[in-house]
Image (cartoon, rainbow, N blue to C red; front, top):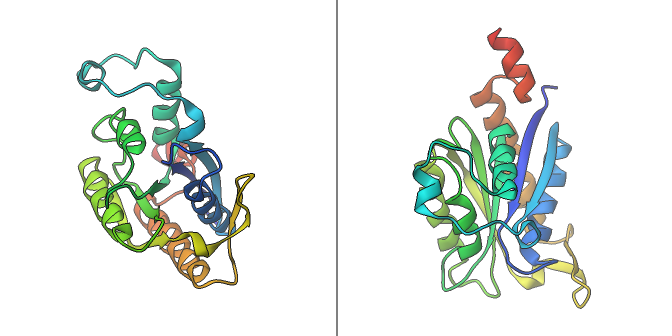
Length: 202
């Protein structure tokens, strides 16, 4: 099986969030499909705010944490973007992180979109907005998207230990989402990890 690298980005400002649990769940499913998966939790990374001076500059970002995030995106073959839903939109924290990226950061990459809302209203809208962002950065969002509500999770909510309920209806959609991302990534990239691509081009 050709392996590939997936970066899963949790765009909630809350530590131990439902969004993180959802993104991590999809990441584990991708590992079963041959992915080397890493998690970028924006609540923990402490990325600097985006600024037009950095966006247009050809020089590397002056903040090390921002450079590391950009490099992680560049090193990935696929991405999962997860967001909480605020006023029917995706989070400002995720917007700021995405704005750190160069305009071709998602080029040739398949991207899976997931969201979490306190209720059903607006949960799909946040993912639809992110589809436009993915397109602007040169990527391709897979057709399926997954939205969750609090009832889809189990665990100790006071401590933040949340997990998606595998007996619930959303788990099957996450399985299908992982299938789509793995399948489209292999089709689009042709080979797995970045070093494999370098060897194929040599």
